[in-house]
Picture 1: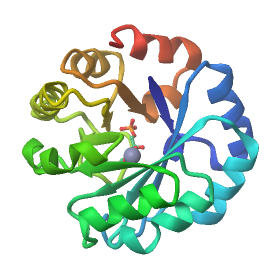
Picture 2: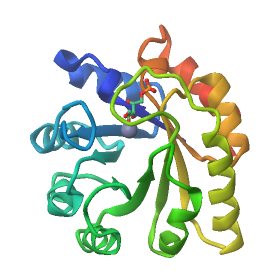
Picture 3: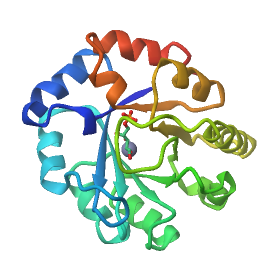
Picture 4: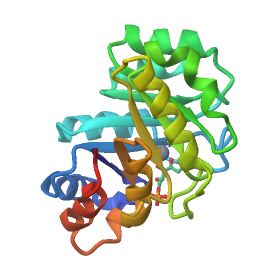
Length: 215
Ligand code: DX5
Ligand code: ZN
């Protein structure tokens, strides 16, 4: 599955950009929330998500890069998030945050930065719908893929299979046709892509190139 990161979209024409995602046969919309503290950048938040929800039936994949996700997950769910990813490196209690997301009817996902071990998510897998493996340092679009992260995808996928669970593995950062193939081969099944998709002249064709190796 492909998740288009609107961080790279034309913000003054977001509705048109959402139509472009839909018309390209892309399944998910990736919505990056940054608070300027957890990462060195600030993006958009609840009111924008609420408007996005009104304008599309795409699966909304919210990626919280914020210091205290527990404080906000219920509100993101109320604004229409389908998946909510939060970072293990944040200050919120992981178990409690998963619980809050589930109670509010959204699907919980844990996100890990490149330096965080694959094993750190193992204890939570049974309660998750997805694990987000960051393949760049969170904060900005358009960065280069970090090759060492592929092994983490492999380790997490193997553990999920061993446990017989239905948890998705998502990769985010520097995903293009080449890195999509490498991460899919390692077991990723949700491919987030921002700059590669939005800079493509033909988004449907670019999405097809990402998917070519979908498992
Ligand atoms: C980075 C964000 C990504 C970003 C990916 O912190 O989490 O979702 O938009 O952008 P590209 O695909 O350009 O690396
Ligand atoms: Zn993201």
